[in-house]
Image 1 (tube, rainbow over the protein chains, first blue to last red):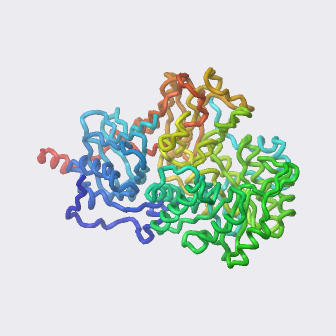
Image 2 (image 1 turned 90 degrees about the vertical axis):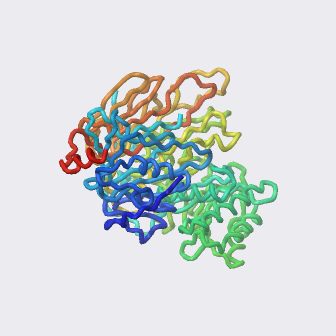
Image 3 (image 1 turned 60 degrees about the vertical axis):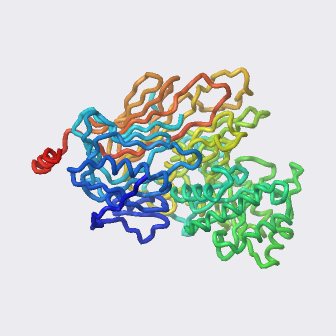
Length: 155
Length: 478
């Protein structure tokens, strides 16, 4: 699994990581905990997303989900922007024993968009056994039949 | 028929155990998000059964559990230890691993012992072995120690232990002062003690108690709530520290001789009801009972498939209870902060049994202790930033519910078959949950509810605003 560190500069807005060990808080998610995480990642910096509304960021978003194989307890910050997704991104528990834990956090749902540009009605995300925590993100689609998230619980 | 959630204050007042509560102080829940009335620092712990190694005997597994607990704003584990010897050596081994995990993380996770065996010498040895470790919870400069019973109960013929001299006195003599906050059995023993029981225990053990815990499960929901409220009130009245319990669900799966007791806990409704009540009367500490008792259905560990880790828990399957813990995060934060958190994300939680109550399985010991309200229902909870439509399809029967912003609960009669739950807003389907089916094809009774959740996000369709320049760029790039 490749976790890239492209040359996109650091975002001007970021989570306050002054207390990274315990309860990360952002201005949006200021009122209650999103928990303690062993790693704080960034969708652009660590996974190569562009978020410019032009590039196809599907691979970066999928890499973010797949990274839970090695980053089993991570929060991923999504800088403001529009991230185009054209294929369903999946996260399955897969691994035996210790399942991943992931939170995907945008700073502000009015500035942070995952846009579905696939040819079908989605879903944009398909989770099996495990559902990550989301916050501060708006999912968009021009398809009126679109579904944002499909979660299949442990059967 | 839909039953919208109503705070069960009347239930509480009608409960025989609740009558005393209602007559002595107000236990009506915190409706306004007002600040806590108890000025002591609030902590939330979880009762941890060391006999069950959720992810196996490894530092990595225990690190994972500690992170899961801290993600829910839980401050520490009360380590239930059933022996401290070389016969059941896994207790010593696992406690060592748990401490290693906490130290490796370095996140201040608190650990203290909840004694569940009778051997004063070994108890002293256990406490002293970990007295100077960084993660050992100290309060007012003393090492915190708890217990599940093991006091003397003459009417039951239980001699208990000499806590005063052989344990607490011995530890003090050797330089280890203890902050003692046990759950002590009342006399006669009852699982749901009252204010009178609390008074009697406080009087009998006044010289050694710094606080008192009420491990109140195994009863009707309103009775467990009333027990906790009465206990905390009496304990605080005499200047001791109160520790209240909350629990997700109760089924005595292996209580074969007494009917395998099952009590309805109402899923997310019951979770909210318990927390709403205790936030109102603000006990000093809370202990979730339990983190991982996979035999009494009281676990909140989010482990996806608890049964896969222990051969002894393979039948019936332990269904994940992850929704209980995830929903509890909100109330834990509320209790600890003293103010109601804003809801800044959308989520759907589900709670239900996976087979009908009256299913008959001929080759298993029947579940006969089912009293009062136990219906074949889905318990669904929505946490919404703004209103949304909940669509439930249970065994092919579809129903819709308009859910308000905030936290709302719906009960839906369940049908055998597939279970799907959808959230819709403004014509867009935010999310779809394919939840476990309800079946009649099981070989063992299984009253462990299944519980899960899914977070979704604002989902907007047909309203995307694209600038001509950006659309043009997309075309050029292709």
